[in-house]
Length: 399
Image (cartoon, rainbow, N blue to C red; front, side, top):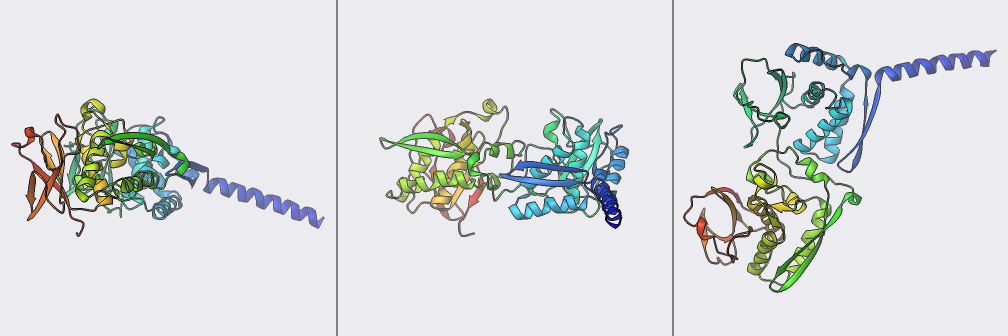
């Protein structure tokens, strides 16, 4: 009889535990990102219904429901993953996008999906703003960097970049009408587009790309390991400052399949010949195509994207050449921007041919993009000799 009572009591407690568990953790989510499995538990109260209308009032209702839910464990899990993987803000935002997509698929309700992104960003400390313009939900993030090709607004002397501009083609969000802009309390952190570290993808997710180029009557062959997930990271990445885009590193597998081989190939060359080798590698190992034809708009590729893509233009090759010279020689360099062209100049031990003086130092022109004439180190295409240029980035290894 006692054992029967104990069994009944145990059964009742088990039911209570299951009920409590279902109430607190209503859903389990799991997805692959950056070569790892990300697991998340979400309380039922955190799950929103569809918005009846798109307005600041309906957004406030949704926010209050989320804010009253048991959301902190979700934020703690996101921030712990960010810290463990050392994710820059842009990479962390991709994690938040995936999380919002899992909880509320974009195709089911774009507005609800965007509210989740805004809430998760804000509760992670970032100063994210939300508003409604012409029945469309628009999200901004506080950013004080030099970012181009996406609209921004100023609120209280602070600049905010539009985070979901790519979802609204041919729409001007640079000047908002008198609308209410919603913020999240205690969210004041600025968002940075700088990427100084790439994720450690699973080595098995890489594929080899064969590249061949000819230098001094000798063919050089490369089997470069590349990961298509890199393209997904930069799908909506904006036009950042040259100092940002040129310094985006390669992933470990790609780096290991290229840089050591390049170092071996030029190990017995003089500095001038080694730089010439790298210049011609970036010039002739890849097919050229203007961005307007390749992507339909101007798009700066990271060095790894240039390796991934079949075609690239002058600023893409300049970024790859800069990265290779930096990793192998670590020499001072300047980036020159002409009205229709981007090229490089490197500070060599001995200046060769045409040179440019900058801050008391002499730099030698190194053209990493194919021209009508096969230019040597120190040669600049005649069509640019009389054109105005701007030095948009100067790299100094000492600084």
